[in-house]
Amino acid sequence: MFDSEYFPYAAAMIIALPFLVFARQFVHGFMKLKKQEINFLATKTNSEIKLQALERMTLFLERLKPSNLVMKFDKNLQPHEFIFLTEKNIIEEFEYNASQQLYISKSSWQDIITSKNNILQSLRKTYEEMNENSKLEDFKTVFLMSYLNSEDYISDTIENLRKELNKII
Image (cartoon, rainbow, N blue to C red):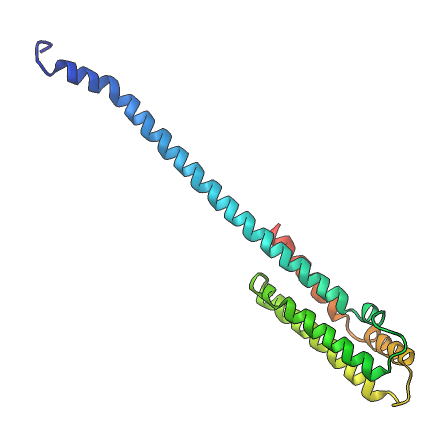
């Protein structure tokens, strides 16, 4: 049996086979870990993008609050000039951030649109209810008071974004 010419080959195979199995398992395990690392990095990058989108939209909503809007622009403007500039500013900033809708939930995006539209509507409504000769300071006061006496939809939207953030983290 040991006299066969194939004995050295058989002995070499018996000795080499465990090393080959070990090498295969090592390479397979290494590839599996690399695949998990790539998936983790892709998920992390995606989470970071979503986080940035939520931050940008929260900043937009903070700027949309009437208490911040009334601080903008020259105090010597007429109410209709203030409204025009404020509306223009809101629309431009919203359009600038419109791409963020790709990274946040549909319901959060809809809440943001609703908040923006409510502020624009409130600006116009306040102006329509005011006397044409009203001063800007009077307009701003009435605008702030009407927001304070209504539902705080901007803070509600920010809170919803915060909840969405907690799902990501």
